Length: 262
Image (cartoon, rainbow, N blue to C red; front, side):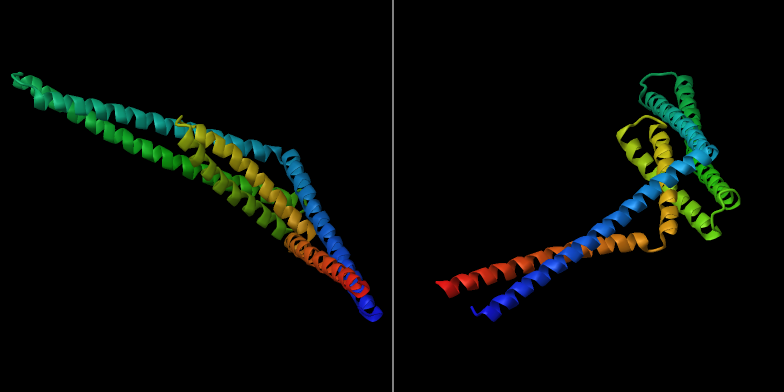
C-alpha cells in the first residue's frame, strides 16, 4: 500500500472516530435531557402532593366510597344467589315429592316463587348499586380534577392551557389505570371491594404522576421529551455505525501495511 493510501485510510479512521465522538456526545446530551424530564416530573408530583393534599385526600376518599358501594353491591348479589338457590331447592322439593299433601306442595311452590322474586329484585339492586358506584366515582373524580385545574390557574399561576391539559390528562389516566387495576386484582383476589380499593389507590397515583409528567413537558418545551428520546436512539445507532466504520478503516490500513511489507 502506498504512503498516500495509508494516509487516506488513517484520515478515514480519524473521521470515523470524530463522528463516533460527536454521536456519543449527542447521546449523552439526550440522556441528560431525559434525566432532567424525569427529575422535573418527580418534583412536580411531590409539589402537587404537598400543595394540593386536600385533592389527593378527596380522591382517596372517593375511592373509599366507591369501595363501600362495591361491597354493598357484592353483598346484595350474594344474598340474591342464596335466595335463588333456596328457591330452586323448594321447587325441586315440591315437584319431586311423592305422596305429599297438596297444601304442602302449594306451600313449597309459593315459597319458591317468593324467594325467586326476591332474588331477582336483589340482583337488580346489586347491578344498580355497582353501576351507580362507577358513575358517582367518575363524577366526583371529574369534579376534583376541575377543582385542581382552578387551583393551578388561580393559586399556582399556571398557564390556562397547561393547567387544563395537565388536569384532564391526569384524570383520564387515573380512570383508565384504576379501572384496569381494579379488574385485574379483582380477578385474582375474589374478595368484594379489594379490587376496587387497590384500583382507586393505583389510579390516584397514576393520575398524579401523569399530571406531573405533562407539567414537565410544558416546562421543558413541547416536543423536548420526544426529541430527547429520538436523538438518544439515533445517536446510539450512529455511534455504533461510526465506531464500526472506524475499526474497519483502521483494520484495513493495518492489513494493507502488513501486505505491503511482506
